[in-house]
Image 1 (cartoon, rainbow over the protein chains, first blue to last red):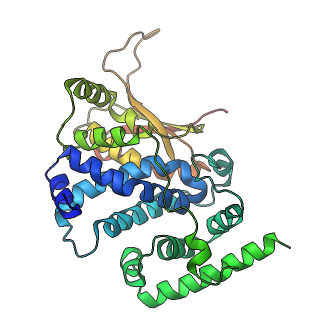
Image 2 (image 1 turned 135 degrees about the horizontal axis):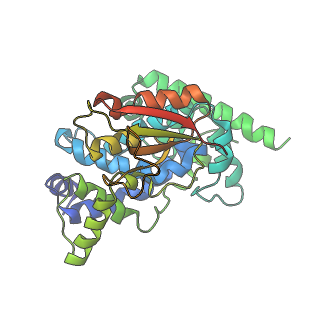
Image 3 (image 1 turned 45 degrees about the vertical axis):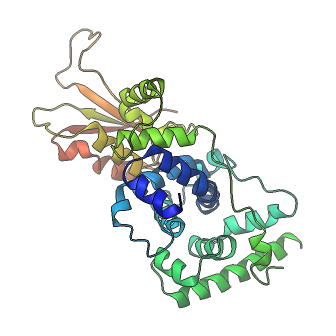
Length: 171
Length: 157
C-alpha cells in the first residue's frame, strides 16, 4: 500500500493506516517539534498528539497538492506557534522544563543544537525546515505564511547568527 | 563554520517518540470519532477506561509543573450547555498555561456545617507569570459562555 492509499485509509478511520503513517512520520515530526519548541520541548508529546488529531480532522481537505509529510509539518509549525505564543518571556518556567525529552546531541553537535535553540523563532523555523528537513523555500513560504524571498533572507540571517553563536562559544 | 546547509543537515532528523505515545494518540483519535477500533477487546476496554478519565487526560504526557493559580468553576442557575470535550479542547489550547484540572462529581461526600449556596463543579490548575496572565486564561474559559461563574485564586506556594 503506498502513502496515498494509506492516507485514504486513514481518512476512512482505519487504525492500521494511522499506525503505518505514524511509524513513517512521527520520528521526524517529534524531532522537529522538540527543536522548534526549544525550551518548551516538554510540550512535544502533547503537540505530536495535537498534530495527528488536527490531521485526522482536516484530512478531508487534503488534496495531495503537497506531500502528506509537508502537510503534517505545516500543522506542526502552527501548533508550535500557538504553544510559543502562550508562553512569552516566562523565564521562571524555563528552568523547570529545560532538558526534558530533548534530542540528545553528542560531541560537537551540542554547540550547534544549542545555537539553533537560541535562534529567534522565525529564523529557527526556516533553517530547521530547509537545512534539516530539506523543504523548498516555496514549501516553507506556504507553511509559514511568508513569501519565498523572506524565507531565503531568513535562512541567510539564521546561518549568519549560527556562525556568530558558534564563533562566540569558541572565544 | 556554518557556510552552507551541510553542517546543519548533519543534525539528527529523527527522534523516536516515547514508546506508548502512539497508543495514546490512537486512543485520542478514537475518542474523537476519527479512528475505528481495530485491536482486541482488551484494548477496547483500556480505551473505555481512558475515556472515563475525561478532561483529566489532556495533560497525561506532561512533565509535572507546579501550578500557582486555581480557577474554580461554579454551578449557577444560568449554567447550560457545554461538554467535557469542549472544556478539554479549550484546556488543550491553553497549554502550557493550564497544567491540570478535574470535573467534580455531582454528589457531595460531606458538607460541614452545611452545603454552601454555590457548588464547585470543577477546577483548572494554571501556571502563569502574573495575575494578568492568569486572568486572561480565566476569562477565556468556556464556563463563562455557558452561564457559569468562575473564581480565580492564587495558590500559596
